[in-house]
Image (cartoon, rainbow, N blue to C red):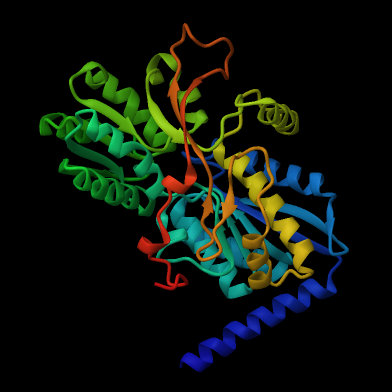
Length: 402
């Protein structure tokens, strides 16, 4: 049975390699949410970022024209898997980019592995991408749940946030983030009093907020993102939680979320991010180009910036490796330095494909502090990536030699 599976996988890889060799065009596929709660943070904006990377690279690699295609996963694993498999089978796809939500992204990595392609994960934040489900054909550009929790929990506990209650989106990202954050809480001498799990795309969070409020916890940790996070924050304020003795704490916030809430609602929130459009001249210049490309007046999210950076790294690796063969390309991606000015002190860790980078601790400005519609963050500190991401000694990646 094992030999049959290996033979089938090898056959798929050989078919894919033959198709690439015979075609004058190769394609990168951007799979993510285009119609739901994560559509603003990835969506068409992420596809535009990948197209910008292809244009900046020159539009061709190894004598082949590079085209970009995209599609809506609807945050559903079956839809994502079917779409991405069809791209590999019929569109001469060589790499998946973004991946969308962690659940659909993990499904996409599995299809890419089966089809002999690469996966550049900029939209999936679950630790499994470079942990339990790491592969030799994928890299994780999105900061994972370990780094996000590590950047937030320790300082909060030391400042008096000893007891915690979590409100968590009920799928792999939320549960992974809650589990990791809970470990850090306990490690720092704090205590987790309980949790409440809400479905993805919920609209009414009253019961979850009441449970958190009645727990009496010092900190209500919100392990949700996108539209869920926006609705949670707004409804929490209706319950008076924003000004109470209980502190609302977030781990993963996108600039789209802040703009969606408005500064009056989001002001004072603190969280980590690897990218901010107004950091320096390089980020501002890239943002202006991205806005021209998309027609959007809002600033790009970290996912959209990381989609650009990851795509550039992939194309450089293809050129250096002299092949589209996924294992060889990903080996080269790990060897090459990450030169993009959009993220700082970045490198791809060879053992597990985890991209290590600095994160910024930012705080949302008040309406009075903001000077323009996208002027929303104060940078409080820079946190070195080497201190944030899971050390190899604790890695659950099967490729890492213990």
